[in-house]
Each structure stands twice: as structure tokens, then as C-alpha cells.
Amino acid sequence: MTNIPKALADETKSGLLLMACAVAALVVANSPARHLYERISEYTFGPESLHLHLPVSHWAADGLLTLFFFVVGLELKTEFVTGSLRDIREAALPMLAAVFGMIGPALLYVIIQFGSEEPAFHGWAIPTATDIAFAVALLGIFGRGFPPAARTFLLTLAVVDDLLAIIVIAVFYTEHLNFVALLAALAAVAVFAFLVNKRITYWFLLIPLGVLAWGFMHASGIHSTIAGVLLGLVVPATRRGREEQMTHRFVHKIQPWSAGVALPLFAFFSAGVNVIDSKGLWDTLADPVTVGIIIGMPIGKFVGIFGSVAFLTRMTRLHLGNGVSLRDIMPISILCGIGFTVALLVAGLAFPPGSEHVQHGKLAVLIGTLISAVLGSFLVQRRVRHHRHHSSRHH
Image (tube, rainbow, N blue to C red; front, side, top):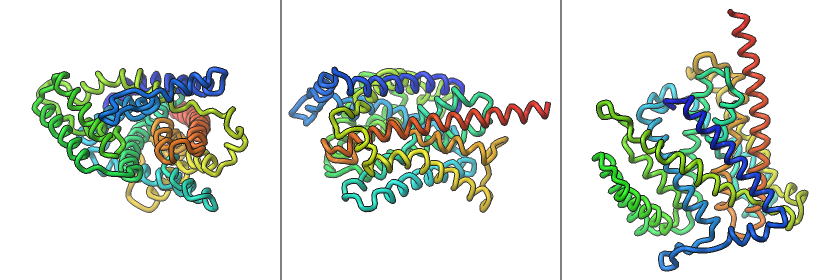
């Protein structure tokens, strides 16, 4: 991304805030206050006539999270037009690594489910997503002195991973498609696109259009956060004269709301897994769904990303950036196992509401994220020490 230090500073703060909200949710969901937490989470409000009488937890996942996906759409557009995805030759290696980085965890998960009942297989996409905020935050904290090209590799890979995750949610987790509602959502996006491309950015026009696109997308059966991505992708990323890119301007305005309000509330209402009232921690951990996600996140990502980069750099003309060795990709591939935001969202979509797999899947996401974060950060620090030692010997 164009301003990596600034992005890192923001991502670090939002990553730590997310972590704090997830831990708070886990503590509250297993404390004497857990029944109050459940009551608040399940409290429904909204217009029934529009089929939007939803629980608080749904408003957090389907409503507030759309802001996060809008920012993802804006960042994707910037990367395609002026950033790391502009030159396909330079972006090819991290793009392919992102694809194999999704195949690895999905395959591992499916293999572990053999012998399980059919619904368990629906969770194959849970361990495949990378949480860009967390991964970049940890690289920012522990990776000072890491080659800049390695950071660019991680950012490009994570952005492509986001795009693939969006496609997976839209294609595999849409049950009943209402074409009329979908066309209405796309029409709202088209009007939004027309206005922003004409540089008409009055909030009293754009916000109602965004809400309309979201509402119709929700009614269409496709996950409503996809509306956020589409709205972000239609914002122009090219400069006119000396003015700032519109995508940058929008990110600057929306990011604080996304990172400071939407994501923490989503984390608080999604990560509250009740272990006390379920069969118990050991039974939860023995569920193949839990095992598949916990193993799929760090190991599946490592096999998919590190394995594909090792193969492609040896067998093709593709190569890593300046000063980056294959060993630097090892900690990056494990950091990519941090799946928090999208993984929690998919865990809620993959299984029927009320299924114990939902709770098991969410707990597994938290454990898999923790393992990936600790192991990845430790290996990043080892590589940083190696680079510092190497550069001091050359001075």
C-alpha cells in the first residue's frame, strides 16, 4: 500500500482493540454475567415490514461489518489502480500464494472431516481467510527491520485473500437468491458509482444510496457485507490534478468508524463463545470441526503459501522482492493463519443457527488465530535478528 508506515500505525491500534474486545467477549460469555450477554446479543429490533427485525449480533455481523468491507473495497480499488496489484508481473507471486494459501487450509480441513456427518464439511472456508488488520499489526510490532519487500508481499497477499474470501462468501454461502432484490442492489450501486465518478460526494446522497444497496443485498440472500465491497470498488482511485485520491479520502473518513466502532462491536458479539454451559472444553476441542480449523489455520496456510512460493520460485521465472529470501516467507505464511474477522463471519454462515458447530467453529477460530499470532510473531523476530546480524557484518 502506498503509505505503509501510516497503515501500520492504524492497523496496530485497531488490531490491539480487536484483540481486547474478543478477550472481553470470551470472559463475559463464561462469567456469571453470561445470561445478560446472551440476552443483549439475542435482543431483536428493526423494521419487521422490511424483514430487518434482527438480533443485535446480526446487526453487528450483517450491518456494522459492511463498513469494514467498504474499506476493504476501497483498498482493493487503490491497489488495482495505483498500488501493488497494478503490475501483474510483480503481483503474480503473492497472488498465486494467496490462492494456494486458501486451498491448503480448505484441503486439510476436509481431510480431517472424513468420517464426520455431512454438515461438518460446510465449514471448509472458515480456516482459509487472512485478517489483514491483525497480520499487518503484528508485523508492525515485531517486524521492525524486516525487509520492506516482505511487508509488501504480505499486504498484496492479504488484499488478494480478502478478494477471494468475498467471492467465497458470495458464491458458497448464498442459499436462496432473490434476483429482483439483487438487481435493485446493483442499481443502487450503479447510481452511487455515477455520482462518485462525477465527483458528487454529498453525504446526504451517498449514505442513503449505500443503505439502499445494503438493504436490497440483504433481501437478495447474498451476504449484505458484499454491498460494502461493491460500493468501495466503484469509487475512483485516479487523481485529478493535485487533489487527493477519492479512495484515500473515503478511507480516511470511514476507517476510524470501521476500526473503532464496527470491528470491535462485531468482535464482542461474535467471539463470546460459551464453553461453561456446553459439553465442556475437551468435548469441544475433540470435535473434528474444531480440530480442522485449529490445524488448518497455521499449518494449512504454511503448507499452501510457503510450499507454493518455494515451488514457483524454483520452477518458474517468478521471484521474491529485493532482500527477501524464502526463509522470510515462513513467518509470513504462518501470520496469514490469523483469520479472525472473516473467519468468525464464515463460522456463523457455514452451519445452521443454533448448531453446536457454530460455537465450536468460533472457539477454534480464536485458538487458531492465537497459535498463528504467537508462532508467526516469534518467527518474525528470529528473522529480524538474522537480518540485523547480517547487515551489521556487512557494515
